[in-house]
Length: 570
Image (tube, rainbow, N blue to C red; front, top):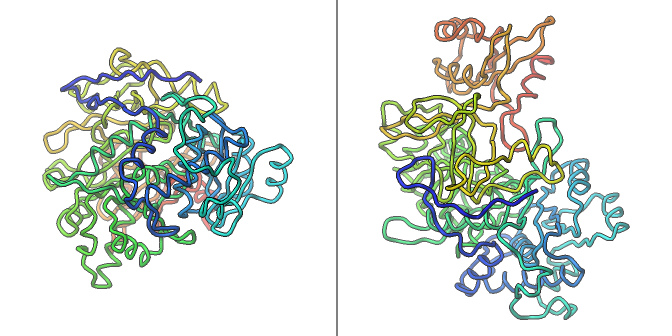
């Protein structure tokens, strides 16, 4: 697993390249340490486990780092954290990073089989359980026999009490600055920082490895992009809303700590469907940056409307980030007008250090005649990111070449190291870049189909679908994303998804639609209307209306579940 070059120069006036900025410092541990030293008395954690100042988080993190180092765990060793969201996350994760170890988050709600697989695959040197989480009993016994360091961290556990009052074994609780000389080997920007396990196409999870330089680059971009509104600077206060095992969850935890803001931590038993608690946390803890899925934001708006609560209740929010879905114009307008925040769409695969492209949704953009509510805009590359559109024939599409679809390929320091223990898959997805003299020489093939398109007079990237979503129907190549886009254009249809299934010995195209509010689509009429815009082989043999599209653990459309609905409609 070779490391990418840190060199990125970009090109001005070329939409493929984000602005070039020095990544300094080049490691996350140094960035976190500098921030804590700059604002020691500022609040770093509120909500569960808080309030904690940066100085207190820093002291606890140093104790965690020395606890690990005292047990021989150092640079490059993997440390798994099985957790619910909780106030202990900030100190424990910062301490793991400070020791030079690699953070591997595991959601406490994962099935025991998946947890065991992750442990077996990453072979950790240590494991922590936080937020009321615990290791499966048989796994805990196996880890102990193997010599893996395990510990539970709560306010009442031995380790937790030691971290709170600093009165434990002086070998690892010594007060004082943790220096890089205490690491087993000083970290470099190309060392692994964290590993996120994502679902693979085969159903076996893959551990995507991201580097210190990549994470540090993204954190510094966040500091530049999300702390300013006009002439004022507002610290990033983010709600730790996403599950801990997602890269969004890592960003919500690390972003505030790296930029001098505050992490707003819900209780460990909170779930995002608890809208009442969500509203109270956003307003009560002065959240300034909020990351949401548009469909959840619509639910939130509807609940507040029903309760007669104005959206100005959220006036503390300065930046609203949407991702994972198309962003409807009405959601944007209400956010801009009634909350008074700026609105963005962010995109980034797990194989890169969090988000890599962004677009700001303004009144002018959503009011443009060519703005499409159902299209997922990716926008343009963030700082130090290069975006290439490559056709099936291997030709790069320039931003002004027209709306030609191709695979999105990413380059720059945020590109990860690859997949842990999977050299073949790494070699297939992480390849030499198209412009090594500009982007550092290495790029990631996302498998996402995109195109340069014009919206509101600007050229931006638009998401069209996945390469794996291409199927053959009676010998004809069909992009499922294209079928879905045409279905969404039909009256009464809010969402659509298509799958190819085996029926009567042949491959058939089947579609599912979610209706607009108060609409009752006639599936026969939908098929006839679709047949007027696409070739006959692209018209599904069956269209069903369902209440919602199924998603997998990563929040993405679950086509397997759709296929199961065809085979088992009951």
